[in-house]
Structure formats: structure tokens, C-alpha cells
Length: 175
Image (cartoon, rainbow, N blue to C red; front, side, top):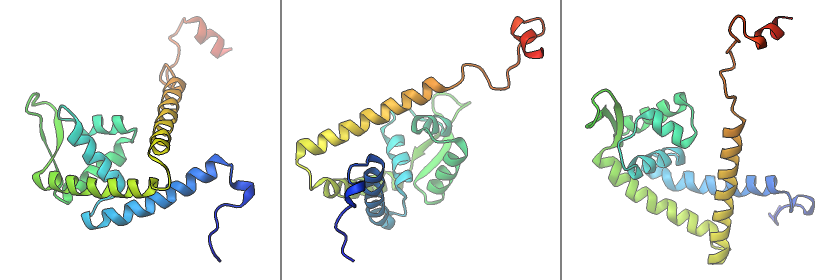
């Protein structure tokens, strides 16, 4: 059966279209990064390390990417095993451990970034330049809005915080 695009009933559904566009691009990205022994997530972490003006810790990298600590440890472990990053004491603060690119990691990043850019350029090729830029800007706007909405929804106190004895809120809770 020839792929002729989405059924009419789904052709205007944002979730359906985003999902299928993402799946197509993700498959291409996985394939192009395979020779570098990198996943798209690992490439993103390496790019962030490289772009940071100061050396970053694993926790700082995780926070900037919105990734949990456990996942970040696994990503850094993988990159370290491949020889692309190293963990060491900060040059500025000996109490901090930081993650930096190795020379092999820097070389790999430069080549992998060129491959990533080709995939993105080819993916956006059906769009004219201004439409491609508008799509990127619109997605960034949505990402920032969702990030802000999640931040605003975070509780202002720890979920296990209990009112102190004698606190009027505590009296209501005990009734």
C-alpha cells in the first residue's frame, strides 16, 4: 500500500502530525548518528557541554535539559565509556565535579553536528526558508510556554511539608 499521507480525518490534528513528523525525523537522526556511536540525546548533551561558558556539573546539565538525575548519569556514563567526555574536579572550585568534552569528543561533536544539520535541512526541504524559520520559531515558542507552565504548576512547598504544631492550618487538618 502506497503511503499517501494522513487520512483526511487526521490531517488537521496537531498531535498526529507532530508525532509522525517527529518519528520520521528521529529515525533519520538515529541512522545518521549511528556511525558516531551517538544517540540524539547524547549529541544534545555534548552540544550543551560545548556551548556552556563555564564547566557544568551533571546536575546542572540535567536541570538545563529538563532530564532527571538518573537519566543524566546514564547518558554521561555512556559518553564517558565512549571516550567523549570526562568527569573531573572543577578548575575554579575543587569541591565541584564537572563534565567536559575530551579531544575525541570535541572532534566527534563537530562531525556529528554537521550530520545533524544535514538531516534537519533535508527534513525542512519541502518548506521555503521563511516557513522553515517560522516553524522552528513556533516550536520554540510552544516549548518555552510549556516549560513555563510546568514551572508555574510546581508546588511552592514540599509535598510532605506539614504545618507546625499550633499553626492554624494544622488545626484544620486535624479536625
